[in-house]
Length: 201
View 1: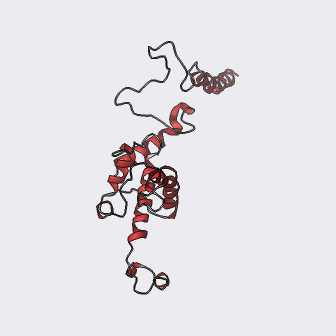
View 2 (view 1 turned 120 degrees about the vertical axis):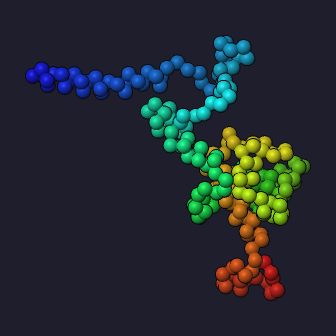
View 3 (view 1 turned 90 degrees about the vertical axis):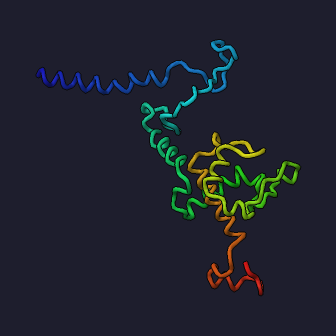
């Protein structure tokens, strides 16, 4: 009887552990961008100390002690360390890259990647065409770094575009480059027949 009572007591304690931990999730906190009298600049938003690394990220990172978001952080670290596209270049990756490219890049770089986007047509400085020899021969990492850190008048997108999506954009840029510079001999016969007579590309 004592063993049964001890077992029931232990189970009851274990069941209450998550509830006890819930107080950590629901502790007093500021809403994003809320004012604070605690700091001299009057804002609650603080810049993380240099060298700070995230432990977890994503929708569920603030539950389960951050364990749910740790895999996403590991995937980010692996993507940031890659020197070239670290994923299989398939239609899923290209469609994701096209979607992200159209959202973040096409306004300046244009849908075709020639640097004549709608913002440029309204007076913004034109970026270089992806179809120049210099950028066709640039390594994949060059595009990833420019997306991450910015270049010239282009500001960085590291805080808007996740590392995996940056590589998806790079894959799509490569597809754009290929689409404008493909050799006729590399096309399937059915597509080759559709080329204008004497067309080399």
